[in-house]
Image (tube, rainbow, N blue to C red; front, side):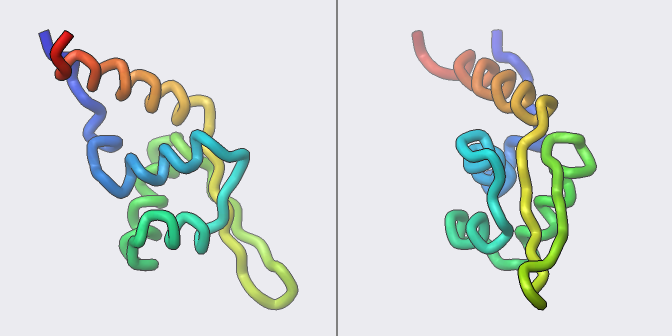
Length: 94
């Protein structure tokens, strides 16, 4: 009756990251941190988990002398989000 939920996306912060990235072409680390109210350390760990799963792409570069980390959702991530939402619907009353 209930479809299994992707445990990687079932974390509040990882789900928030994926939801943000689903609506933009890319987002930088500071923007994601501000939108999620996460600490830098926790956000870094969760982004790394999503990257290792192949859900997001992380690029590091420089703007002037400052480092800049940007994230974008990959096709696997989009598919995972869609599957997660569909699975979550099975938990809701009809």
